Length: 342
Ligand code: 2P0
Image 1 (spheres, rainbow, N blue to C red):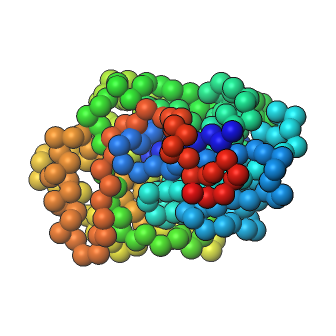
Image 2: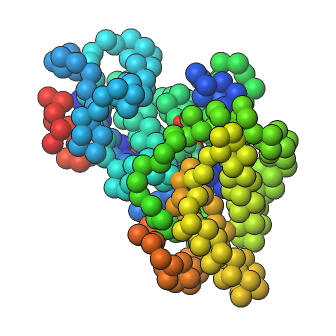
């Protein structure tokens, strides 16, 4: 039977950038995010069937090969192992937003794939097991398996059994919070996150200080979220994003994800906050130039206006805090029962 799930990206307020174990995808530090709702999403269908002649996967209606296919099959293989099945797999996945452009398409993609594959194989995994499964393909995906406000606990165990996401608070805890994504460039990023973060861990002198500072920043962020203290959440988000991008610049050779449009957005938000006499918005950037503008619903129009006037802003996505992956009905499937794209 085909299983279809929808999952959404998440935006990290305290970032993951660096692994202590590349094979098991174990991070150097814990991270905190909220799962996005109401806008950007991935839909993924999975079928395990003895009638299929080969493993096959489509991403955005294009048949995948090489590394892209291998990464999707990594999840399928883990599921086959757990379920003790040897059937071939068909996977179809679609994003309604730019892929691999720093809007966390790998987070929503692998969260949806982990949910759909384990469901298609009848595994019935709990959220912790699903989070660990998604983590094996992409670190940030382990956070998108849960809704609301999420912490990925870095864990201590060698096998990664305690490195998974936990929910800090459900989406209903802070429904006024938005992530207004300003798309400054929708092309694929030049250097992938995995290669980029490995290079930062190896060559950035600033990185050790970041890792030292993170436990206290994480504790402060967790508390500020629980108190819905927007001033502290915005301030810490900007601080952590700038600190992560500083370690990227300090990487040899340097990694530059921000472009002149990103810089323009930073200036515009700094001016807006100064003119309001308080923080109405906190900006945060992932591995790409697109800005995530964290603000409350009442200020979205104001924030959008201050950024929309800048040259080259292609598009906005207005996201709220989302409830996490959902199983879709059979009529929403991207695959036929024969494993062909529909
Ligand atoms: C994050 N990013 O915490 C950080 C902020 C990008 C910058 O997680 O190598 O695609 O697959 O584990 O999860 C992007 O990295 O990397 C990411 P892998 P992933 O959201």
